[in-house]
Length: 190
Length: 190
Image 1 (cartoon, each protein chain N blue to C red):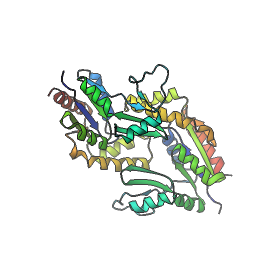
Image 2: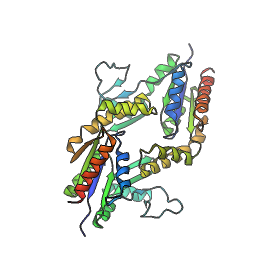
Image 3: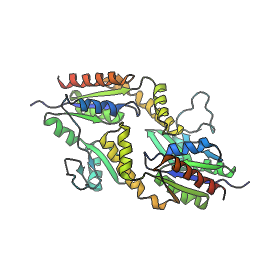
Image 4: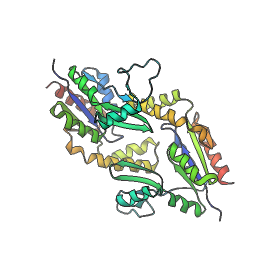
């Protein structure tokens, strides 16, 4: 059994990343898994450790951060952490499955450093910053100031695009889905 | 000239807060201002210091954080900060204008501690956590895991609702806008 591959998809907020990933997963023709996240949230009834999440105490989680065991993590409010364990990614690829990681731009580049040629990093771009601003504004749910911060962050993230293995412009959703699908299909068939 | 009032509106993500605030500002019958944010972003052509933003160096910004000069701040990517200066809020209310602060739940409670009876804190609630989950899911743009994290954070924020001066349930948007408008109108007329 050959080892699986790591596919990392990153994009500025509002570029349609989740829509593209969901469409590819729903197509169902590629062997793609998601990782099981670790969290300090207590299990809800029926949730199983290692299936829904890896449930950890705050102390365990902080220790794992200090040991560099996370590919990425986030503190969603004080004391409440979510993260992706490197050991979980290793488990999935060692079982021969491919894994999709939906993480931020800096996290994506970190994954490439760890997994090298076993990983492909894909950057989803908006057609232009002006178009991204238009998309965020047309949602009508954010204040101008929040939009300004998003654009600022997007420009920072776009400055990292040349460091990715592949870039896909989401100017037409169906084509972008098709392109990302083919990229993954090609890479996982190597 | 009497001093202006501070209105703080907070809500879990997806509860319609920005939509409600925008509708009230567009109605235009209340004397409401926004603060001018401070940022480490360089000015764009045509932007004026103190009008569009207070432009600060990263060192100035970090010093201001250390001195407790910010009501709230955020690092949108490494080295790029945005925040609300207490001195700016003071300036606006000392000029006799009311100010609306659109900040997070913990930030809102901090503002109340600073401004006491000159501030009112308003919490916008979803009809239920199940309804909030439904709203986030029907957008179709977030992964199940991101939705799970949002819900977790929302539950944490909802646990703080009893600490707010007023609570408004956004089960019907027009009524919620009406209720928040009336709350602000009543408070600023005191």
